[in-house]
Amino acid sequence: MKAANEPSSASVSAGKHTFSARLATPADIPTILAIERAAGSAAHWPENTYYEVFTPEAPARIAIVLQDQSHSIQGFVIARLTSGECELENIAVTPNLQRRGAGTNLIQSLIAAVRERGALSIHLEVRDSNSAARAFYEKCGFANTGRRPKYYSGSEEEEEQEDAMLYSLFL
Image 1 (tube, rainbow, N blue to C red):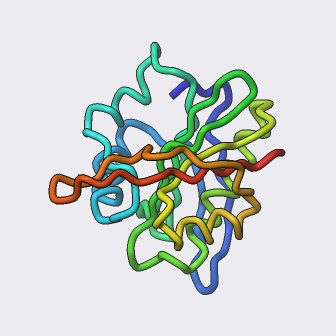
Image 2 (cartoon, rainbow, N blue to C red):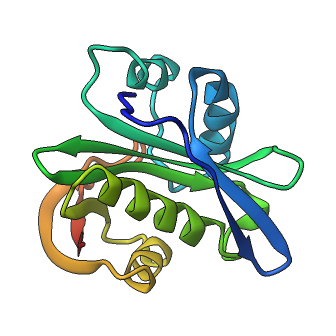
């Protein structure tokens, strides 16, 4: 990940939970991978893809982790920066914190980091059938801006492809 600034930490609360967000490091990858694997709706990347995020030749990205009071990582978000825009590539929180504000805190931390880097918008795509994720992004201020037909391929058991819904947040 290319970061011009030192990692900043912001403390945020979600109900009875208090979290701090900070830039991720390669040492966080095993925990990020475990959270991603436990989250059914997260994008499932090969382990080496996470390590590539931190290589000097990688495209500019923001990788943020959310820690609880004991400094245990409870979620992450990874986004790619390109020409004044940001693409949210992956986000997940531990299953016990879903629908408890942790994801919203990650999005808020991402928005702050994107603004610091001068990007004007954040874009993402999500499966048409993932109504929980779609509602989450809409709650965070993203607007549905389109559809990509047959963007997602089905599983080995399913041959059917699924549309992607496009969402954008203009900063």
